[in-house]
Length: 93
Length: 132
Image 1 (cartoon, one colour):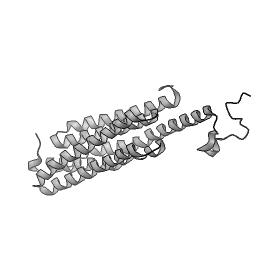
Image 2: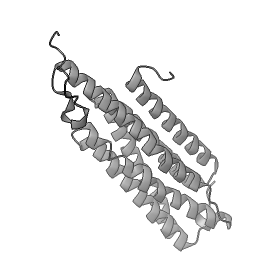
Image 3: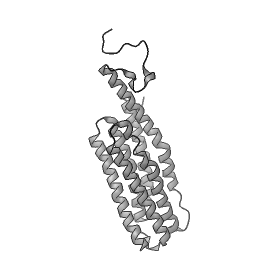
Image 4: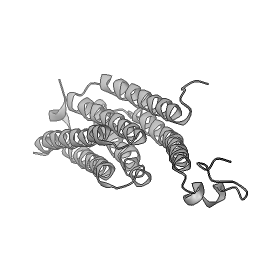
């Protein structure tokens, strides 16, 4: 019974995180200015990282944890690089 | 191949509650990103997902794998620490860039520069746009 509840709550959590990714993507498409799009990208990468963790619980494999860690790292590096580009027009000075 | 059927009921319920709470909090933060009206308000909303949502989902993963493998599995702490440390840095740089762009645009339009930050106005500064 509780196992069934866990299966369904995994499904619901995946749907909710998918909707959150959709919100980030919509902000990337709608964003009136460039900084809104960068913020949408940051949100999207964090939500994708959480979705990878959820998929890892669902399949029971530890491999997804490493993918989630890499996604978090690349999301941070990408956001900082894009913000630096907005600030100066160059990424590396 | 998952081991949900080998999980004791209390661990299954705890994992489910943590997962649903984390996912719901993350979705609320992302909806805030979509709904709020100005950029400086929108910056605040997704941090709900990067802090509370990450903590809850990492806790769910830690409970699940620790109970299944009958040993403490703590490497999800790494993701939580990474998120909590990197998010303020990235958003501070981003808001600095946004404020720089807003200030430059306002100066180009000839409006007073220091409306958002009063100390940014220099006393003897002639407004741009007038040829001097």
